[in-house]
Length: 120
Image 1 (spheres, rainbow, N blue to C red):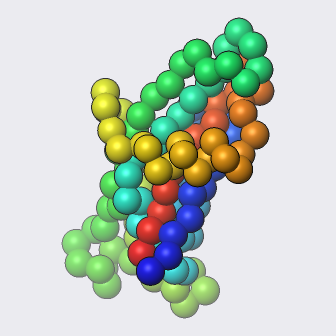
Image 2: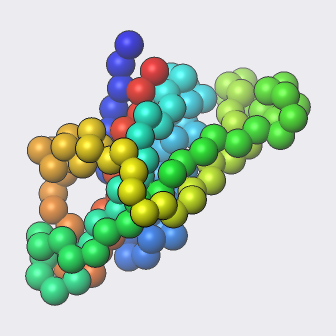
């Protein structure tokens, strides 16, 4: 068993979610990793490193029909069709934030930082 925490940065929520989507799909296709919690997004709006805004999203890996029909072959590796994100009020972001706070730089001014934990 293993896992990793993915952290990405961007100017908008959409940019960060798009980057995380690519990482989730790659992790699933290459290493059979799936999100075992929700996505946390944080932003510093007044001072770099001081978090003033946050959002939580529930990630869902989506298939069309069964696995064979829904998979896209990329370098002979079957990948799910899509990852969707649903904004929620409360979620399971403890592990992602705990790891990211130890290893990732705090958000710069007006920068969104998103993190999600992937696990086998």
